[in-house]
Amino acid sequence: MIRYAAIDIGSNAVRLLIADITLNDNGYGFKKNTLVRVPLRLGDDAFLDHKISPKKTEDLVKTMSAFKNLMDVYHVSKYLACATSAMREAENGRDIIKKIKALTDIDLEIIEGQREANIIYSNHIEQDLDSKKSYLYIDVGGGSTELSVFVNKQPIASKSFNIGTIRILDNQDKDETWEEMKVWVKEHTKELKNLAGIGTGGNINKLFRMSGEKEDMPLTFLKLKTLYNELNSYSLKERITLMKLNQDRADVIIPACEIYLTLMKWTGIKQIYVPKVGMVDGIINLLIEENLEI
Image (cartoon, rainbow, N blue to C red; front, side, top):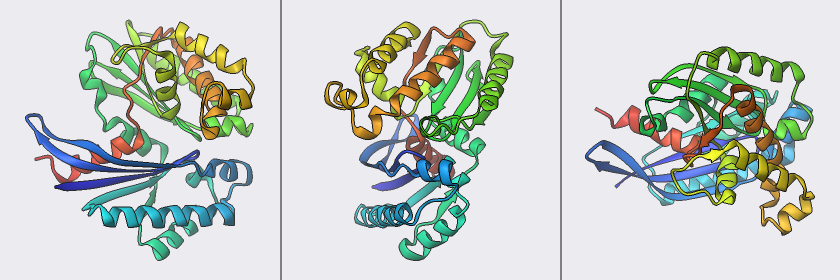
């Protein structure tokens, strides 16, 4: 049994996915074995103070140590550990990486926005979609939003923007970044007919589940807007108690909705597909491509 692991150190949560690699008629794939998510909220430190605090650094080191032990117990043969927006912006990000290597022996890579986008697109979900349509792929994280435009199943443009859920909650999103994103997305989608959305990230997955929509069916703009209005009508406490949302999901889900709805409005997208994959799935697919594909 070949086992790979993916570690994603995001601005909101830190994740470990341990996956069993399988061989089928179409080549190699994977089955999720174990997924662990720890809501560390590194973005609060990174976007407000531009460095990760000693307390959060200690929590991150402990988390990485636990992940290392789990990978050892599961006999993981290869792993890739990536840190995104929060660690990119933290002035002490490099020092923390050295500390993690020294204390846990995990090699951690701080990745740029473009590499983050490429890893997410390693999921190749566009292959299962209608080639007659064009797609705007939207991945919303705590610190950044990755966009990519697909035409005939081929990516024709992609870009990362410093707009994310934690950044918005901390009032660290800038008007000029929103404007830059608007100009970029309109420029790259204005000629496209039949444009649909693809949404990835923990928030859109949760919104899709809450919508009660059938698997493989898209979420409509109208349904997403209705969900947003409903969520927004509750206080944070009510979203936790009445809507049964985790505490670390109940606040970020509102700005996540705003990002998706804004992008759909700018581009006229009426439907968004939610394939339930994210960064960790992309990392596993990347490891398969780099190590097993012939």
